[in-house]
Image (cartoon, rainbow, N blue to C red):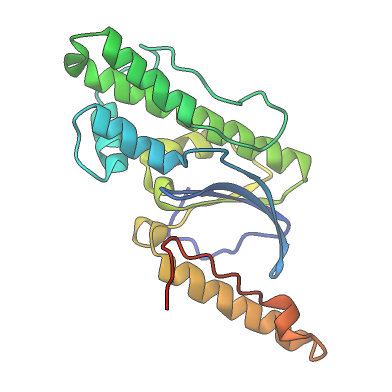
Length: 222
C-alpha cells in the first residue's frame, strides 16, 4: 500500500472509521449519499485499546503503546474472544474483549511479565474483527474501494492485515499518519463536498439537508 498515492476511492466504497470514539462501517455511494451500516454497541476499538493499556500499566494514549510492545509478543499465545465476528451483521462490540483481558490479568499474578503477549493477542483479536467485518461489507455491497480511517488506522499491524487480505479487485485507501487523527481535515473535506452537492441542485432546501441536533453532554442552564 502506497500511502503517498493521490488516487481517490471509487464509488461505491466502504469506509471503516476506527478511533477512540467511533467504530463505524459506512457505505458511501457518492458525496452526500452516505449510510452507516454498522457501529459499536459499547466501547469503540480505540477506547478498548486505551483501557487495556491502562490495565497493563501503560501510559495514555494506549493505542501506540499497545502496538509498540505487541511487536515483541506472540499474537497466538492467548486465545482472546473475537466478539460478534460471526454475527452476520456489521455491529461491533469490544467491551467483552476488554473484560477478557481484565479477567486474564486477575487470574495470572505474573501478567506484567507477559505484557507483550497480552498486547499482541488482544490486538490480533480486535483487528481480526475489524478486518473480517469490513471485507464482508465490501463483498455484500459490491464495493469498489475500501477506506480505513481514524486514529486506529495509524497502526502498522492493522494496515498490513488489510493490505494482505483485501481482494485485488478492490482498491485499499489508508490515510498517512499525519492525517489519520486530523479531525479538522475530515470536517473541512466533508463540508467541501457537501457544498458541491448542494450547488448541483439549486432547488435543494439547505435546512432539509443540514440538520443541527445539539445534544450537550453537560446540563445547560440559563
